Amino acid sequence: MTASLGVAVIGAGMAGKAHAAAYRAASTLYKPTLPEIRLISIADINEELGSEVAARYGFERHDADWRAIAADPSIDVVSVVVANFLHREIVETLLTAGKHVLCEKPLSDTIDDARAMADAAREAEDRGVIARIGYSYLRAPGIAFLRSLIEDGRLGEVLHFSGRYWTDYGCRPDAPMSWRYQGPAGSGALGDVGSHLSYIAEYLCGEVREVSGGRFSTAISERPKPLGAVVGHTRGNVSDELVPVENDDYATFNARFERCVGTLEVSRVAAGHPNDLAIEVFGSKGGARWSQTNPGQVEVILHDEQDDLAGYRIVPLGPAHPGYAGGWAMDAPGIGIGQNDLFVHQARAFLEEVTGTPEAESLPRCKTFGDGVHNMEFLAAVAESAAQGGSTVVVKEH
Ligand SMILES: NC(=O)c1ccc[n+]([C@@H]2O[C@H](COP(=O)([O-])OP(=O)(O)OC[C@H]3O[C@@H](n4cnc5c(N)ncnc54)[C@H](O)[C@@H]3O)[C@@H](O)[C@H]2O)c1
Image 1: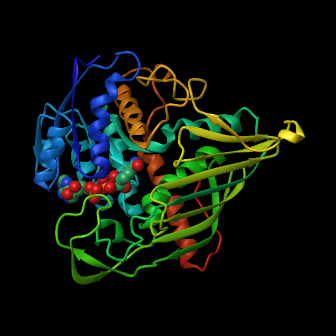
Image 2 (image 1 turned 135 degrees about the vertical axis):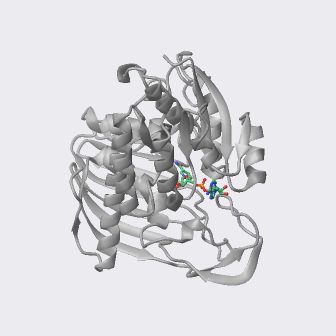
Image 3 (image 1 turned 90 degrees about the vertical axis):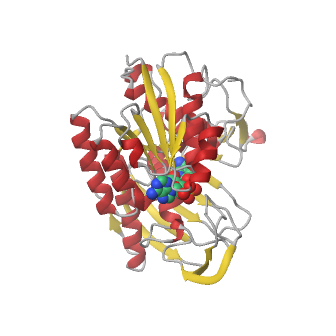
């Protein structure tokens, strides 16, 4: 095994910090089987932020230009955590330079760029260079438990699925213009949080076959220009000048999956719902639901319960559930698993693959760029359905 790995993160914004924190903690999960992880650089064009984040998470330096990371032979592993439209150029350059790349979802803001990135990843793989995409919610023990309830037959035949990812970061008209509001139809709420909801739906319901009933709404059509840097979902410090919002604030659609049909709904203007990812699966023997609002528990109903006790029961997640035992500093039931924790498992899984840990001894592998293209084809089908007034669109088999 490699004696040590040099790590860098490009993008010091909301999710960039989560990647930085995750690389710092990845070695502390499970047994100490990873090589030494050297935290080398955080790159961000916002130098003040890059410097602060590098210092905060113990990285040796910050770079204003990400190309310094591509050129640095001491760096082996890089997370790309910037606006989606920037992913392609950065990822392709890094892969050419021989860096293993973990790119944030969605792979890009256009399907053509995503396909080109998958081609570059295949070519890099032939040279032993690994490119993966971060689907952090696949690390949520509650979602993994829902899947095991489906796969071991305890919910019976899956009848239908309901999923929503409501956020409210754009619900106020004074939320400043940022990269999130620019790009083609479907790159708004659908690309941002719908990318998560769609891969979660497939993880539970099987591969998507077709979508219908696509509808987008741009509820707030203009936003003020920011006067300073916009990081994550920050508000305020805006000018009086308004610029048009290009993509969707809200999206809804139906889908037919291998196992069942379902409805999916995403929003960035759902006031009072800062991060409300909620999924529910209905089966012939019962049902189960999980929500990011209470991520340390799953609610389950099974029909074989006594009639006078019938109803959803709350199951606190713990070592009996997937992705829980033996890894966390405390892995007792009821400690809760937050969204930041998912990034730590994701970083660990990526580092395990890079260091050649056999799959059977590793956390579930991160997804491939091919999976990332499929996710974008799914979302593109929703956009096509919406453009055609809700018509049915077949999604290419993955
Ligand atoms: N997995 C998750 O749960 C999750 C959560 C949030 C965001 N994301 C993804 O992470 C990515 C970044 O999102 P975010 O919310 O962190 O964005 P953000 O706007 O908060 O941060 C992006 C950072 O990139 C910097 N930047 C811009 N151009 C750059 C350049 N050329 N070189 C280096 N840095 C540059 C900006 O200064 C900013 O600090 C997106 O792909 C998003 O979809 C994933």
